[in-house]
Length: 201
Length: 201
Image 1 (cartoon, rainbow over the protein chains, first blue to last red):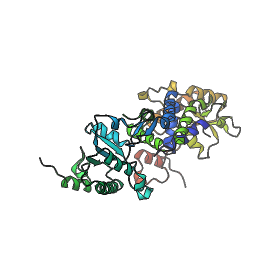
Image 2 (tube, each protein chain N blue to C red; image 1 turned 135 degrees about the horizontal axis):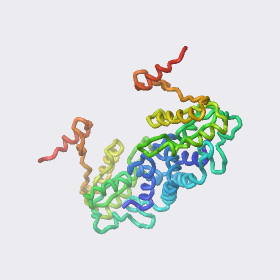
Image 3 (cartoon, rainbow over the protein chains, first blue to last red; image 1 turned 90 degrees about the horizontal axis):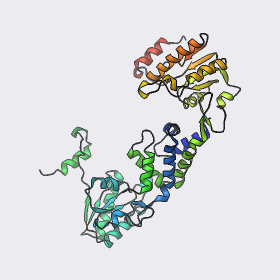
Image 4 (cartoon, helix red, strand yellow; image 1 turned 180 degrees about the horizontal axis):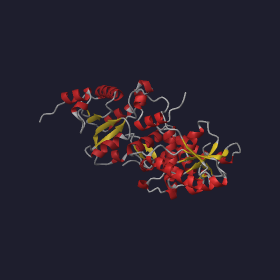
């Protein structure tokens, strides 16, 4: 009953994560009502997406298809003896925006999650251990997400890296109160962590 | 810092209504991680969207670009002497899904809204009046949204159509309790309308 081109667009947009039929309908109708440049831009950007992006073979960050390794690794000013381990490539940009980290990154490609069938073998842990040896790494900052999966992954990494090299400095991001949160709204685990890691004034 | 193809995709997807930078990032990264067929499908569907869809010159419903008028109008089994007036083309599909309407439709293309700069002249009201005369219409069902804009538009339509033809039957969709809503959660205006329009058992 809907014009085919419109129902095709609704169906295709419904493949986006968290987008149901009503939202897809709204997106498609909005694009139809807007200048065809908007739909054209999205169409072109998506058709170039896979061609233009690849994983860095060393850090597993996302890089331009014509680059060899991540510029955040090849850049001479970055400290290769400090490696921050994160779950997903986009976490890098969250950290980079703080402008307070000058080391390099290593993307695991997820976190251990038996329910989702993600085992340690599927993560880039072997490559991390190789890098620790090859680049003579002094400190590994484990920055997995503060979730059950992230915490288990952090524990496993700690064990494996310590076995490899007992002198390697292992750290993780501090737990505590985020800025702007009212004490009474903080959850118990965050509050306990903030109390335990209290800082001297 | 992000690969260009990825930041292009994030920027383009951020043009969708209600999609901020974080959601656009999530969409783009999801598409990058999925098979390139998903991004390809969306890309193709959106590039065909404007080419494949046009407005019906009589009812202003959305139709395939190769159709002359809406099949919901040209279909001999539809009653052309009953016209339902709705704001947007997608409203048609909401009504059609009920399978309880056999008349035809007329899309206004919005509702009067001085704040958004939508005046009566921008709506397809002139074409409606022409149709009422040409098709010898007996009943016009005003099915604008139950919003301030929809109600003002309904009042104006009522006035204009009555002036044209005082014998024309004008109706609007019933106001009352929607299915599954608890009395105590219904808003006051809905509840007053439901009381006022109470039905004999």
